[in-house]
Length: 68
Image 1 (tube, helix red, strand yellow):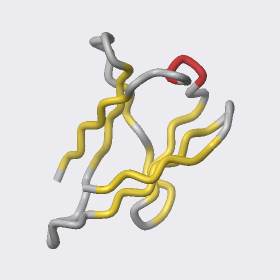
Image 2 (cartoon, helix red, strand yellow):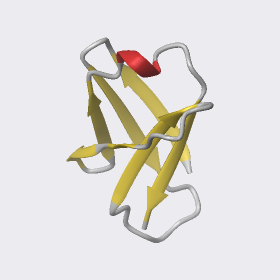
Image 3 (spheres, one colour):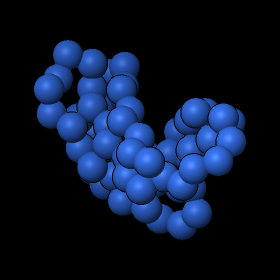
Image 4 (cartoon, one colour):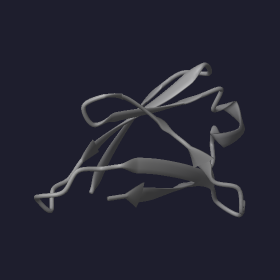
């Protein structure tokens, strides 16, 4: 998977590119390093997923869970 992250203080948008080939993405969750709380992202269109009000994640290393 390739993750391209864009956005601002209001919305984080992540474009997922499945470089491995086949398979549709059914869900995406994100969490900050050291946190046990996963935040579900919403599909915008195509392979773009968004999270509103991501300020608590700024400046942190992120982990993504992609659900196929």
